[in-house]
Amino acid sequence: MRIAMIGAGYVGLVSGACFSEFGFNVVCVDRDKDRIERLTGGDIPIFEPGLESLILKNTKSGRLSFTTSLSKALDDTDAVFIAVGTPSRRGDGHADLSFVYEVAREISGKITDYAVIVTKSTVPVGTGDEIERIIKEINSSIKCDVVSNPEFLREGSAIDDFMRPDRVVIGTSSEKAREIMRQIYRPLFLLETPILFTDRNTAELIKYAGNTFLATKITFINEMSDLCEKVGANIQDVAKGIGLDGRIGPKFLHPGPGYGGSCFPKDTLALVNTAQAAGSPIRIVETVVDINNKRKQGLIARVKAIVKGKITGKQVAVLGVTFKPNTDDMRDSPSLDLIPELVKEGAVVNVYDPEGMENAKQVINDVHWCDNAYDALTGCEVGIILTEWNEFRALDLDRVKGVMKVPLIVDLRNIYEMDEMSTAGFEYHCLGVKSF
Ligand code: NAD
Image 1 (cartoon, protein in one colour):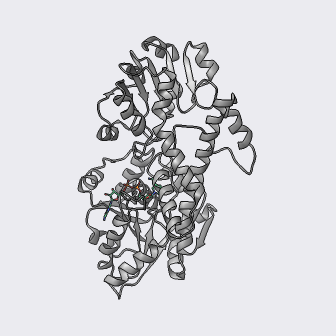
Image 2: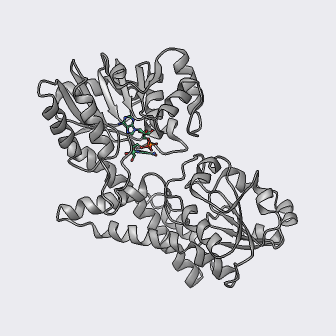
Image 3: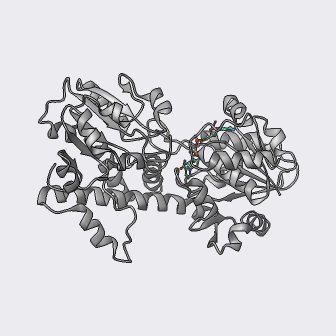
């Protein structure tokens, strides 16, 4: 089995590396020359736990390679996976499918024998039909099937998610394509992973339904957290109290600064647009998008309320810039809302993140980048925990208190206990209790 993976980003690299680990020959293609040169030299351009060793192992064995040449990758391939980005289109929030359609055009003239063309990118319902139309318009004699196989991995635990997924969704009505997909996922089939075969439109919609449902769950608990602050209840216990109900479940019930990342913001918006265009608006998701945007934009007001409006000239530490821990991904991170506002308000901002600073430096200006959390907190009157990296969960509180000018912590991830912090001498503000 030979697989071509087009797009060597978070999804393409992880999927390509994992398929090669399954024993298939995988060629990853990216048009970004620098990225391919780095990969070829064994330098992994993204931070994802476990990815480096998996890539190095499989490149060494000869099963995994990287190229900018599409023709080389498509030579004798059985399956072509499209894993390019589908960001929000500027102006209207629809998914920007230009990268996907460009790939469809590029591959249409280069496939000689039968191959399955598999969309791993998250694409709105009907995109597979359009890919098929484009390919057949350019090359009417092409022998292929276009399959939807949405990816559910999470950055930060992507390898494990790919190797041990909750389910695999495959959308096609072709028996031949189904058989190839069965072979590709055979190692997971042997682990009794549920594999859901459905039609292509349904597979495409499942991905958006999943992400928007999770975004809704997060938004629900965030709003519940705000209510707790007003009425004097405790969100941790509310979350536990409802999460123990098997119909609800405990996951995605942690209040925070608003969801961010490379998927939820753009996918919620894309589904809103798809549904409106189809004449079947999903008002609950429209509301989720609106609430989440306002929550992120309102972070500065939360911080200002705590310091009674006096932020100008204050030295503030921000711990964590990535949208979640264990990734270097900065896309739509809440830090992009909060940090520029802090700077605009005249705060002197120290920032530290274990893995995200290189990417953050491209999009955040006028702050001091620090080597560790203690450096960042030194001399500060406010410390804000914005991403729940493990290393922030176990800070030496005496040391933190010693280096800060004023021991005031704003914990937007609720990673500390109120009692612990007050015993350690901090003014501590977290989400979903009356302190805010
Ligand atoms: P990414 O931006 O990290 O990677 C995309 C890559 O595609 C880039 O390296 C880019 O250079 C390359 N590319 C673009 N056009 C190309 C072309 N014509 N030929 C070759 N390479 C090309 O994106 P990502 O985060 O990996 O996401 C890819 C898709 O997977 C998106 O649709 C996303 O919604 C979906 N997805 C992402 C995640 C996630 O956690 N990142 C999870 C599930 C699904």
